[in-house]
Amino acid sequence: MLSMRSIRHSACRLKLALFYGSFLCVVPFQSPSADTQIIVAEGSTETCHARPIALNLAHTGALNDAHRECEALGAEWRFGKLQFAGYEQCKQCGNSGEFECKVTQATFVCKRPDPKKKVNKESEASSTSSTIKNAFGELEGNKSASTASASKGPFGALSELDDLNKKIKAQPVRILSPANGATTSSRIIDVSGDTQGYATNSVLDVQFNGASQQVLTSNTGSFDTKVALKSGRNEIKVCVREKCSAVEVNADIEKLSLMATLTWEGGSDLDLRVDTPSGNTCNFKKQSTRGECTLDIDDTKGARPENISVPLEAPAGEYKFTVINFSGRAGVSGRIQTYHNDKPFITRNFITGSRKGDVEATIVITK
Image (cartoon, rainbow, N blue to C red; front, side, top):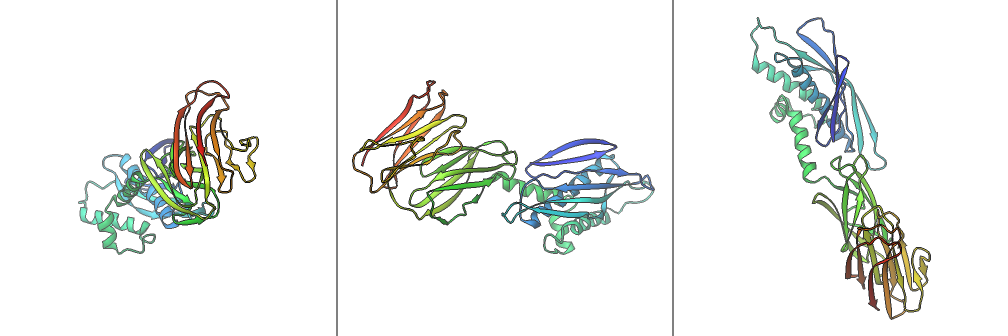
């Protein structure tokens, strides 16, 4: 989310645009001439990007609001020039190789033309384009003045930010881990990423191998969950409002005879259990029976799946998978997806009743 804050005459107002954040503090100083005002601006990104992009966005936020602030002084006022590009500070976002950046104490000049003097419009346009080039040309590979002028124009920085916002709106989800094409030796892996500020405190749909679960994003749009993999190729998709990103992960793990994955809406506690032909049980109390079954994940809030694995060497016979409504919450939608020899097998969708301890779904598979 792009937010900018400016201060004029000790009053602050919040400006909102789309997906990138920059906070702008604008203070008009008393000028020697009634025809000029100096504006001090600060811009910062609220999401993480490659360092040149983060710096560009911070500078762009300050520059765009400087244009608006000059116009806000009155119909006869216009943006004049960049006086000082400001101080740049960047902070790395964990180990991602991306940064959040801010620019402080950037100063701009607003001008009011002398009505007695003839204004050279061509000269004004050239001056404004040059100003934008000076503010951003270095970050974009030292474009020539003619290239910067042609691509940006007086409000080119705003156009550039709009273009970036459109790309993010079209595809906001970034899966940062695992990497596409990665290989893992773990059956349960973490899936994390962000929505680049597009979907904060929102529900995302995570799809993997026929199963689907929900995850809630943070107040910055980031997400983190776990998924259960089968041996070989796995596709993981994360979607927000029908806009999805996908990665493929190769799981170098033992093949299973049977597997069951339980997913459901958050905010309630459901339990997955299996009863084996030999009379043993795997559930939250007893999470593993050697050579027969393992409860890989036990979840209490629906933020990640519950998963039970049955190895190839497990005894032949009937395996009964059941879903128990441990919390007793009614109206919760869920799904149990089973796999036979690492291929999707039987799927059961259900909606919980209101009685604690009720069996909500049952699947019996003969091995």
